[in-house]
Length: 533
Image (tube, rainbow, N blue to C red; front, side):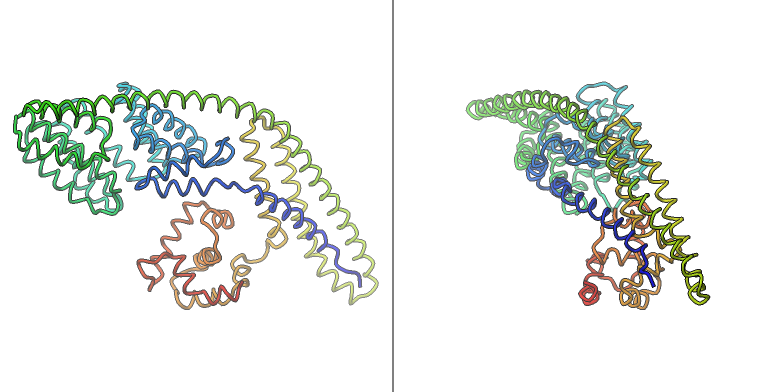
């Protein structure tokens, strides 16, 4: 009896797909880890985060494609940390631009809110500022980010404070103070509400209430949801405000106390806090008639202003450099367009060749089936297998027709970024379907179960509340897949997988609250993992 020739067809196809996958791995982006490391370090180690971002080489648009909004968001946060206001506006504009393209609505919301601050305070353009505020609300609503919407809700109070309408600002905050306090996963919003209240009452001359809300803010020092550096930034501004109050009332002893407290937080000061601190020091030494220390602080203030002028100059130079790099990158992309057309042509040729091979092999299979019809026993056997084979081949032919349509559509796209994204999706589609299109009639969960039956048996026994799909997600996590990869395999979204992981953890009794789901699976099934490897 002749050998079954269809297996050789599939082997050739899988070899082609594996070769493309291996080529993609060789050229895998090496800079994503720098972006992730910068994200982890941004709150407490901003200088280290800056080093990680600076390690990502040009062209940025190519090296971290798909993560550009996060990159520029981190750059903007660092600009705020280092008081680089000129660069801050530019980077958050870039973050918003790419967030819209990448549909990263959380980054879009945060960037819009930062642009609101900058436009309202620095550029003093209230019309444009409120446009950004409305955009922040829109994008946070799209991403269902309740914490972001809470910050948007606080902005009218901030605007009233800035307009010196302190009583109105207090009324807005006090109405929702308990709501901000109830947000336990991020106490920043409660801290910011306390900050506004203490600032307002200081300006109103009610120093007792100002101290009341200042003390509540100080109690948040050890709250793990608030970065230490962020807490200090709000605290030092309030110390400066109260020092101002005591200076106006010529309470020198209290002024000295708060100048000393402010001085202990010099590293947390922004430009406004630093200038205010130097001014108060000069006024204090003027009041106590200490000419020598007054001169020393004048020199310090002069050095600080010189430093700020240099920062502004460096920022202008950096903006010009970025513009030049953008023009260069655009020219490079135009040159690559022709190369991409060549790649598409090669891909079309490969698919056509593969289609020809499949058709040829299928004809040979049909001829082989007719050859064995002379024997009733062999005929019945071949007839049964032939019907199954026709279903599989028909599915394969339909799949190839769809791929050819996709390739034709890609070849008509003129936008290079969109074209590259479509080619990338096509590779993923081929890779994903190569292992599944010949077995669509089989149960997916049963196939995964066959890979490690011990794991599924033990999971069902230990955690009967979990259904089959949830156990399948646990198995993928146990093997080492990330949320994005699991989402691709299950034809779902990353957010949906994250939500399912949370529900799985809640259903699994006996998990240590200090351990993650992955840590629990690795520890519980380490012997199973060793056998599967």
